[in-house]
Image (cartoon, rainbow, N blue to C red; front, side):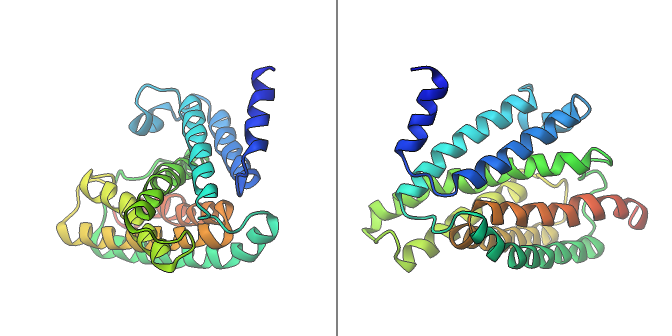
Length: 243
């Protein structure tokens, strides 16, 4: 059996909830990188080092498949298909818009550093590409590792409310901690850092709740809308208004 057939058999033999939606978002991320070509290599190097962006996204996407398999077997994912996406898209976009507006207010009051955003026009494709990476690295992978551990330590059932709440709360801390403690958004005063941590904790928790009820595509849409407001639209305007 060739490698393509083996991969297809592996996927068919294990129910991966939301696989098609995941692959579509993954392909979109890879496509954005292809269109960008080498023009954004320096932007991606901040996150991928010397690894070519397309290879990095391929590796991240493959790791995400393994995470999807674990979450499917854990019963963590409960929705898939376009019907679930259509039901969740509107509310996902509204929640993301609310959080996007909140971070703009914080920027006006506390002022994040000038150089936190990738410049136009590269930002139009860079942030959709990185949105997929962020969802896999900060949400799918940690959730696939932490959720089985929670069940093992507590003996909670897969669908038990406490199991879901604890898993969401713990995993939502990942991105918030990264941004605050690694300086992912540049030098900030401590009050702005504290706000950013709480903001991202709330946004991550909301995304994980959407993931469970409406699937990966709806969660990815939240990230895309948030990035469009914060990094793309406001990312261009803030340079004129604040600096």
